[in-house]
Picture 1 (cartoon, rainbow, N blue to C red):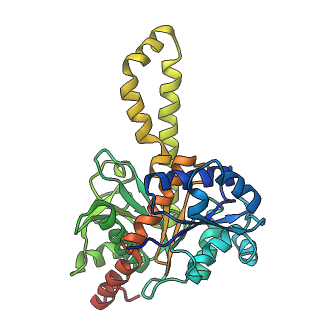
Picture 2: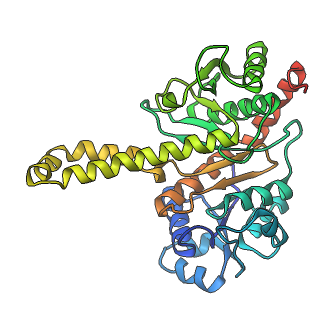
Length: 345
């Protein structure tokens, strides 16, 4: 398969052009078949490309000086979709000039632009933001929604489960990923009416490429006992931020502890291999690249503070989803779900 090129919003994120181009270059060093459409200030992008051998030949630059602000309201960003680097990157996917778009810019604006330009797939009411989170096992867990939809009904959660399972089959290789709903307890009586209704529909579903394993509490998200965790965007975003905060807390706590005395510094040298492994596991750059599932096209959101390694991972997520045809996989699974009659309001 010839991999379509990937449109990169080179102006998005905390550091913009330098990190975005460096990340794309790192991804291409790992996978020399990658091609790019870099959207942003042409002078700055070409200057950055000169420091990365082979990137100039693998890239086309689409000049654009307008940037979506980090705190800009999605409604205002939408009105400037045709003039901003983010909007032009997403539009390249719509026009077929790129297979996927990657941006580290404003999440709300990126979702609004992507939804307007690419539209939701037939059978999908709302797209969801999904990301890979580390676990104690060798496989990551997919969690969605992480902020695209504040309120979700049972029908939305059911569709999220199908989309998450399709993504998980690509990542884990499992034919029937284990799916759970995030809840305040594992008992069947716990949770809102929508969560209980979604659970009942998932239990009744047949012919879907997933295994519904009931509920999971927030403290078990990273245990590795399931492959997909489904929730509404409000709860999902809070859970994600709590996990990220806990990871930073543990890292800073260890840093302070190992620098508190001479004996502690010696202890650090002895335990350095273990602490480096922990640091690697907790580094969000190693799991960077959230995906908007349910759209007629692939859009990947990189963390705004991601470094070059993080951006490279986001680019690789986009490429993998293109190669494994995530959109078609979801379409087939949603078709099976619709045929079951379980998506009725």
